[in-house]
Image (cartoon, rainbow, N blue to C red; front, side, top):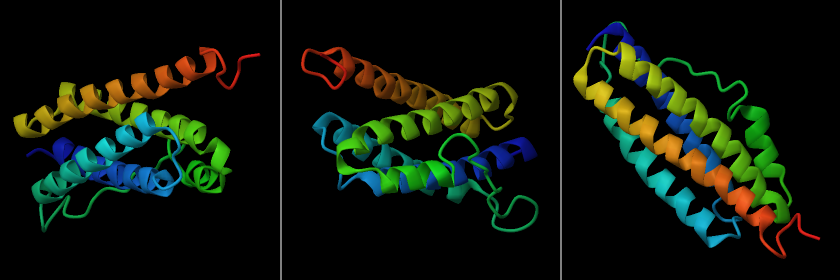
Length: 157
């Protein structure tokens, strides 16, 4: 594995840890069954990926510890606190917003890794992350638009 692969894995470990914090912060308060199912699937998938990535990282030497990943603008502490503090009626909307921004950032990181990574195993993981996170963002963004446009939806009159 090259240095760029180790940096990617370390960054994604931090990113996935935050994803798990996000979905766990809302899981008992989500009202919409489809959103609850998506959040549970994200939690299961990223939990598995997190275990794999931790296992692939070196246990000693350069790259032994996961790289710090700053979540500025996509799942940062303020976004996580906004989710935790959201009134029950707003949890679904806030979760969609916070999670969509966070998963978009993961897809962007993975897309770059596919182009520059050296390890085929890590590049394969990056491809799967890019595809799954992009699909999740489309679901999260599309779901919000469908609810707002539906008769009787939150923005209907």
